[in-house]
Length: 244
Length: 319
Ligand SMILES: Nc1ncnc2c1ncn2[C@@H]1O[C@H](COP(=O)(O)OP(=O)(O)OP(=O)(O)O)[C@@H](O)[C@H]1O
Ligand SMILES: [Mg+2]
Image: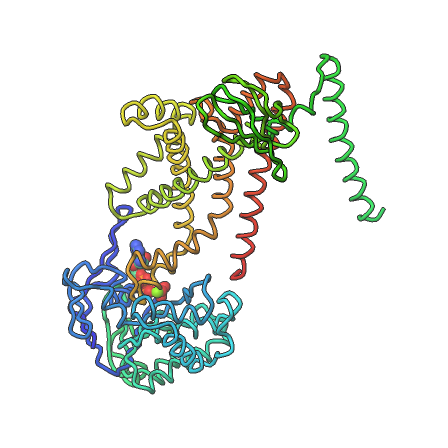
């Protein structure tokens, strides 16, 4: 589904060069749930943002469903509608109601009719457990509810892959569960997911594979059992000692 | 002392101060021996115009028929042609069988006419409205150029904004009228509107730029991640939010524009200010007219700010 080959992303600014992603080669298969973990600043977000073209790559290749993002002829907008993204800060559209948040891109990008998009929107709101909030504005929802709306908004585009960038990090602890529950359900339904998270429990329970990144490099990858119980790399061991 | 009573005392003090300022003005004008002639003012808003009818030829009155409020005077000319004239009842100056010479007055009609002040108010109103709309469009386009990735667009917009903001509007109006007006052969009204619109556009552009930049980056990213292209994200996501935030400064800008439009009177456009000046030359009611003109500007600007406040309340539902 997604293949990255020697992916590099370098930020140059104020005389400094940051190799945020430094040669990552990975393959995310269809229906797989891949969790990326690593210390702060290790390039997890940047890697994820490269996957849907929010960052332009410095070098290397990304193939999403067979389409090369590095190819200049690729229409990134077409790729993005197949790749859903959920952000740490939710990024709901504050001037639109919950339902309008779900409907807008469907009508504008997917060219669905208003009625069709609303049906789909309501269906998804039911799925994430807040059908009664459709007329509410995002600001009047709790963080957990907002993040669930954000997930529903991404799902409304019928993406082939869902990317999550620390979806629970901005939430109060008591709301983390409800968002993770929605994500687990998605995983059970066979959605291809790439999740950056600090929720080790989620990684252990749901992930098919764990990627560990440090200093922009893919340091270790394997099944959760392997990664949490017998990591080979020294840095992974050190990291696990700190977070567990 | 309870706060309610205290507040009322302060309010009375405000009134007292305003009242004594008014009284002071009154005393001051007494000293310079100025006769206030407020009764002369209304006729410059609307007046009852008398239109005197004359016969264009020599002839004789045949009949005078009353039709409701008007009289129909029929006159037979020397070469036996009948022609009728309509005048208001009671203004007839001829009788049946009277002989008339060309140019004699036979009666008159009355009608309400718009006086110079009302006309000036109207000119100021549509002048400001037209230049606001054009200025908004120019400002929107320039503001978008200002935040675009294209270097040329960005530099051109900065160039335009700096030139306009760095020179006085009065000078710009003169340049538009004397230079562009001559070169491009445009009328004074077009020159005036363009000068105002381009002036406002530069300020609007900066307001729009600040508005767009005040929207968190995550909004654009969320829109793009849903597959929207940049124009779609701008139209559906960024600009509506930016518009809401920029409404107060935009309102201020357009209120300024109404006031600044008084400067076009220097290129002989009969706006409110110019009309005021013209009325003064014929009435010498200098003080009254300037006060009235000020009041009319105040009326326009406060209506605008009420409208904007209403829009702001409407938009506040998502807060
Ligand atoms: N737009 C940018 N400009 C310059 N440097 C950046 C930019 N975005 C990220 N970086 C740098 O790239 C590196 C990787 O950042 P990234 O956000 O991908 O880390 P992360 O693993 O997601 O960290 P965290 O867990 O704190 O979210 C950091 O050193 C960061 O400072
Ligand atoms: Mg991050």
